Amino acid sequence: MKKSLFPVLIFLLLQGMAACGDKKSEGAASPADSVQQRVADDTPYGEPTLKNSFTAQWGGKSYAITIERQADPELPVVADELGKKFYDNRVEVTILRDGEPFFRKSYSKEAFADFLSRAEQQGTVLLGMAYDSDKSDAHAIRLGAQIGQVGIEEGPAFCIEIPLDGSASSIVRDSDQDTTGDAGVED
Image (cartoon, rainbow, N blue to C red):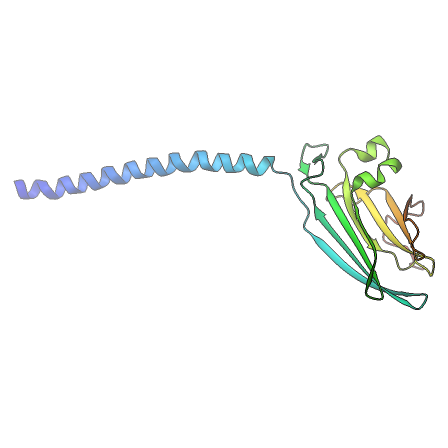
């Protein structure tokens, strides 16, 4: 009888351990999952870093233009109308003339604040910048910039003018904004 009871006890002991182990696993996983979920929901979304390079020839000189956009957690966090939070972007513009430093400046949405209405400032980020070869000439390199909501990609556009004589750069609101992507397309 002793011999037949021993395997039964071992079986019951293993069953009890397995049952307790399952309860601990479920109990341990649930709070961790909910904590991870809350952290993920509270963390602002940051757009991926984007880096583009362009070259131009003006006045017998070669210009290498680098534009890098990245989410900046040090800027104020932006919330859209649904309450979703985003990191605003910072854009670094670097221009070399014949391989030598010519222009370097960091831009955030704050640089465009004087041109934005209160409504345009709410829930928007600096979406990015690009070299505008059509508007650049022997007097200035011009960059296009846009402020808008993440994912919607619409909003006010701006022209940043960087004079080739080395004088101060300027920002103007682009009154001839192409919101359809059809600029320059002939019918």
